[in-house]
Amino acid sequence: GSELRALKEWSILKMYFFVFADLSLFRFINAELTRGYFLEHNEAKYTERRERVYTCMRIPRELEKLMIFGIFLCLDAFLYVFTLLPLRVFLAVFRFITLPCYGLRERRLLQPAQVCDIFKGVILVICYFMMHYVDYSMMYHLIRGQSVIKLYIIYNMLEVADRLFSSFGQDILDALYWTATEPKERKRAHIGVIPHFFMAVLYVFLHAILIMVQATTLNVAFNSHNKSLLTIMMSNNFVEIKGSVFKKFEKNNLFQMSNSDIKERFTNYVLLLIVCLRNMEQFSWNPDHLWVLFPDVCMVIASEIAVDIVKHAFITKFNDITADVYSEYRASLAFDLVSSRQKNAYTDYSDSVSRRMGFIPLPLAVLLIRVVTSSVKVQGVLAYACVVLFYCGLISLKVLNSIVLLGKSCQYVKEANMEEKLFNPPPTGTPGKPLGKPQSKYKSSQEEKLPSSVTSQPVHQNESVVPQLVTSNSDQFLTTPDGDEKDITQDNSESKHRSTKKDLLEIDRFTICGNRID
Image (cartoon, rainbow, N blue to C red; front, side, top):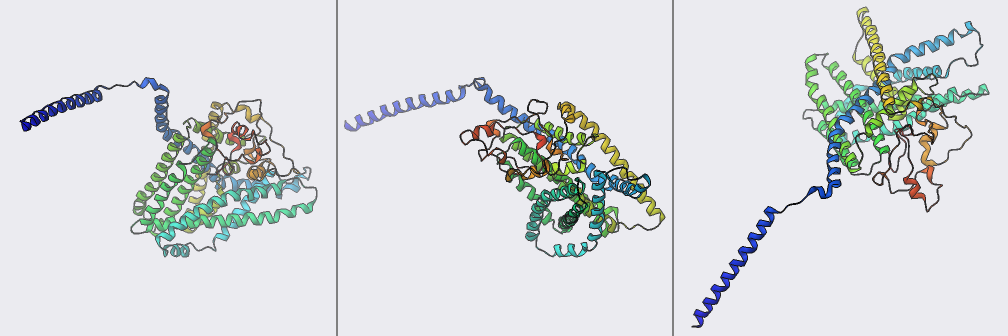
């Protein structure tokens, strides 16, 4: 009887268990299958996410428009060294020789622009002859004998050294130009130009050697059998994403990074041209070898473009920056070109590009002339006629490029409502004014010592013509304020620093924005 009772109770428990288990399981499954939600209850959040996706999709187009415009600006400044600069130097020397025929009625023997042109031409010629003492073949075999990991480290060190040379090189050239053209009361004061001139020659020569080592390392990578070095050097571009994407950026920092990417991409194009010239010379200008180099060249260019797109897309996403900011950057670059074409311009266009982007054309031009003259042998009247025709073609390309750029720049400046800035008078420097803060040493050296700098455009507080940088909580740094703002009281320093707005026209390649230079 007890066994029968226990069996009956067990069957009842099993029945209740399965009944309640089935009911809860079906209810859960039914709830999961029929459960609903309404996205419109958080419309702002999802709208913001959709805008971020649209921004990432717009970044490649807007970025490449800026890159193409910037590359043509660098090309215009680079062609200027080969085409118009020799003609301007010839006219300046001709004026200096024929000046006694017209009398000494003018106070200046030469105009400041003509003095700067003569110095550029003399530096170019001296450095070209100095480069003849550098053996490219010995350098190539010396670099080729190193291991792959050594070459990878050397190439990274060369990139860092190139940025350091560019940051200090333009200051050396600007110091030379200003020392040579500033008004002097005594003739003995002209002696100060000599040390500045030797510093400029030494800088251009060393920078040209540095770029030659870069080109040689890239040439070794192209000629390696397994292409392992080229792959490692291309992977270095993707390492750049890791170092840039996951850091805080303001719009000023992004402008600096965009200028750096433009300069880097144009320099890489010139380095690839040098590599192709050297390889074609070794193979007796066989056109079949050019098709052997073509896939590697395309691979390097494609990796550079892909890295820039991914980097800028995620930087704008993480920092809530819209894609329209690239049109502001393009307008700022266009403003430099338009302002340098005015009658009252106080800087040369190639110098403004150097300050804005960190691209200095003189060392690169010295190296390219050295490589071309050593690779291409000119013999006979027909060869010299071809050289003259090629020079005329370069002048035509320079003039055409300048006309198109000037038209596009006027369009961009008009779209950005920056026309009134063109008519502002240049700032007057105070020679006896001391440098205020060490934080602003880059900007101070250009605003006080060089009143011809285009980066020191005057900014009026009562005018809102130029598109200002909109600051938000996501665009600010929780760091110590810049040097120009350290005299603010301690209790309100952070809030006032957050409300400070910097004009894009005041930001060049090496201006310190926040806590970094990119």
